[in-house]
Image 1: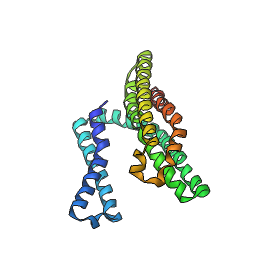
Image 2 (image 1 turned 30 degrees about the horizontal axis):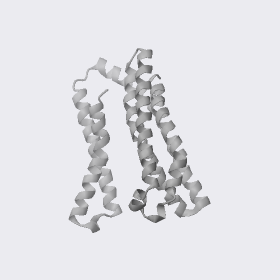
Image 3 (image 1 turned 90 degrees about the vertical axis):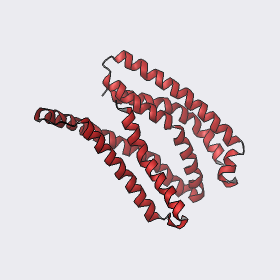
Image 4 (image 1 turned 180 degrees about the horizontal axis):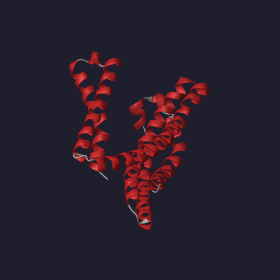
Length: 219
């Protein structure tokens, strides 16, 4: 449960990428090209990998034959579970992105742009439930008391539900006013209707996403 290290490794790639883009913009606005962005993106994840290697070396400083065998057995279990979890993540992403192709085929690129902005705003509201689920997963996995784990997960899910509901209401108020129009222009005014349609799912799934990590943590 190294949340501090995990948070640092999670923040490192986008923070490094942002710093690189700011540096490129400060040097010359014309230097922000696809090639330089690609190099910056790759460099950000290389920096994150190096940081992870430093943490790993610090944690597992001394190796012995018996410890190596235990690490190897543990790694096999981690890889086996990780492949299944990653497959679920891939299917989830494909499920989300399949809508883009359907809307592009049926509604054209203009409607796709409206949907893309709406989906980005909705996914931003899920950041809280994603962060909470990341914390709930190892807590439940390490806790042998099933009753206590259930209590923790429900308490976290309840607070996530409340906060996501408040954030969704604030977003809907902004969508009803001229705030979003001032940010995206008049052409994006239809996204307010889409947000109203998607808001019940945003709120309900925020609760479910925390409980899904609770179930995953129980194995």
